[in-house]
Image (cartoon, rainbow, N blue to C red; front, top):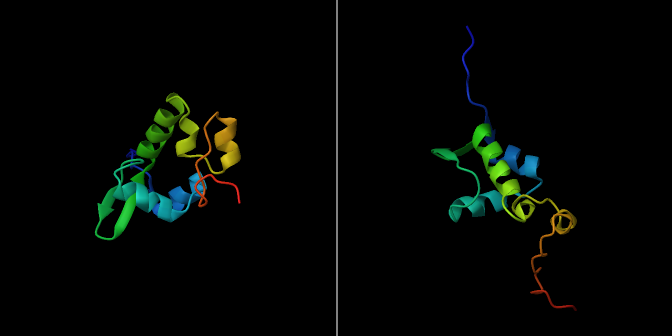
Length: 92
């Protein structure tokens, strides 16, 4: 008899999956954005099913790839406007 145990990802694993900085995920948690996470003391875990549901919701929304785009080129390919960089969008 097999039991269905949920699979969990750490912040580092999810950051690698989405090619983001772990600090980006930390910021999302602070602002209550991104997928639902479980916090046990200092340990933060993301249920794989919640991550996949978040990904599906992002792809269903108009221009959703920008939330998980690894590069500006991917966001552009998805039809997303590029965010302003450190210069505030001004040319040097």
